[in-house]
Length: 330
Image 1 (cartoon, helix red, strand yellow):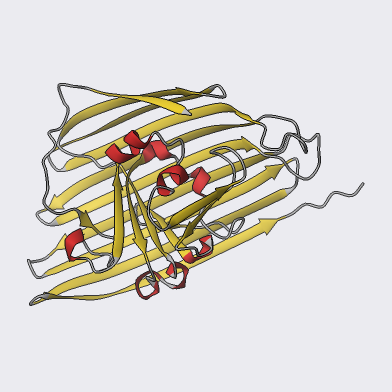
Image 2 (cartoon, rainbow, N blue to C red; image 1 turned 135 degrees about the vertical axis):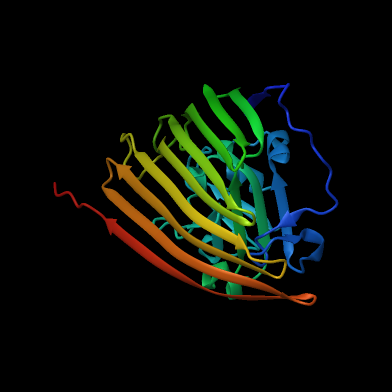
């Protein structure tokens, strides 16, 4: 159980304006009102995340229809998310448009994605292979970090909970003129609990440090350049096969995105982007190490044709995965 106390400068608090339509981008890679989307999409915003009292991202997703989770310990332990009952490798996962995956688990490392940096989640249920490739047979989960806006909005997040769990996060977002920004840094620690009292009687604690950043620059009317970055480092205990060992896992998740968008007219817009997601997983003292990198170039044009939309472009992914297992002789 984790109690979180967010604080924000009251004088600079933004005014919430009600909107008739929630806009989503995951269903077709284009911004559309959710009422116009044929696919089954669920949106979870930051306000809902705070009200949920969840300690990890998987706990938030477990409340979404069609999703079940499995975890072999606390919030930092290996976590699997099943969308529509399918294996995790059949769900495409993106952070700010950056594809992430892990060779070690066959899917995204959900426990390494810091919930404190998440601002919005879009869940697309159902096959989306025509848009996202064969990894999206079950659906797509897209995670967005905070965005900047005109003004200056600092915030502080403090949390305490059972098992000596404590959390501290500081964030600031704002903008002036053609520039906008959103930066956040957070840390969380916990002594954890004993996941296997009979097999390995020790506490499986964890420590997580994360940083997220988004910088935007309006080059001209209708033209925008944006850079996003997420870096999460996590060290957690787990119970291995050998009793008496203090088994530790080290996760390092990084995402980088560079995007340029141009609106040439009311009928035509273009997007050019480069993204790279890196997932590194290591265990100690058990000798295991994997690193998965996914790099993608995207060039996309959208042209309105009456009531329809024509999309033309190309996407070139490069996936690099390497693993190392060191065998010790006795």
